[in-house]
Length: 302
Picture 1 (cartoon, rainbow, N blue to C red):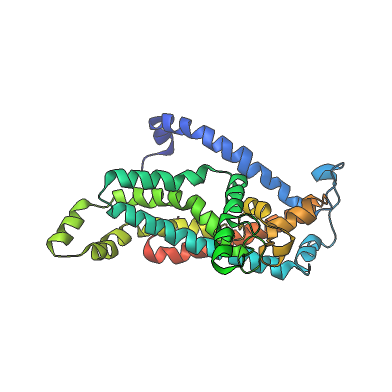
Picture 2 (tube, rainbow, N blue to C red; picture 1 turned 90 degrees about the horizontal axis):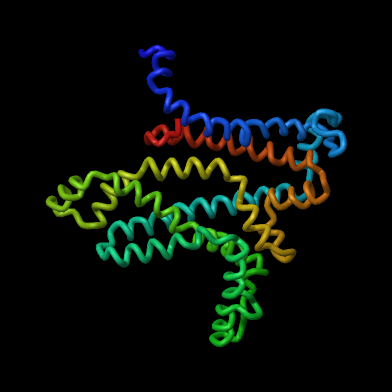
């Protein structure tokens, strides 16, 4: 084994380039973790974090969070939205990447790829405006067609039956092309000779996809799934906050939006910190569990 000092002298340029990234992590990721103690205090803006009194009992804000009559509904909405987004947000970009990988018309592949990942750069405010133009019950293009065909309109943005589908559909549309790029990059790394051997053996395109392409990018699929599981309690605050309204609270109100209303709008920072700590612990447990399961397919993060 090369001694540490010798290795540091040999690769000093690489360690020097690593310093800015380490400084960024220390300042913006690890230093703010000091604020976790706010969850165990009656935080006051005037007194600051250190001088604010400790709450008794120490789990008082967690009791307030778990004892809320809306907690069960909030947790259910958050989990359901996250699971729907993970399932559809993983499968549809993968299908698009497989189609693009099999497309032999280069100009068409470039056009589809460009058009599909452009929505990724749009803000949720713009996407909400586009969604309203199509799905608004009073003036949306889709509802005008429905009224001409059936005589009735559908409240896509105000109905509890449709709202989750709208949220999941808009997020998949926004990020599908961007996600497909990652899978396409992984497919490029597959040895072309494996496809040539399969073609000589008479394998169809579907057989090649099933036995070569999908196993070739299996680790990337597992890696992305593990990373997304860590954010299972973050169902997309910005999107939900912009899209939802009082009529769809029963199916759309999630932990983040509730914390924003009851914690930050009412200046109850301690409750917001307790909810954030709860989400972080659940996310850490899920990542550890998913990583342990992923080891069986050699797709673990560490």
